[in-house]
Length: 113
Image (cartoon, rainbow, N blue to C red):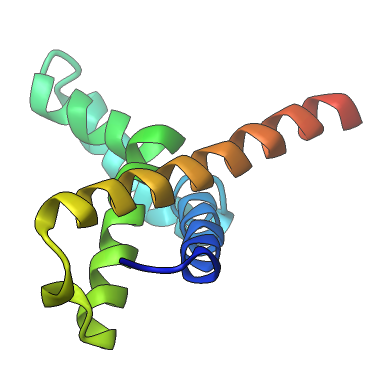
């Protein structure tokens, strides 16, 4: 099981990774291609799913948190040290912390406007 400091760092990294994928302009050309692909067949459920996945902070944040946690656990050799259930709970914790920071960011952004 990972410690509180590692959990916090993974949560912060998950928040930043989610912001990068969903909101930052560096990926606008790729996102524009996906949105144009979806508009070519707007009735396609698969295309709607992909657009929702890349434009929703909660959807993207879940997978970013999972990828970060898996990378961390494998790189540090801790993946085999705990049952999968524990890693699932860690995934929920990392994703939850990242989502909490996204909510705070959204709330403070509205207050600042």
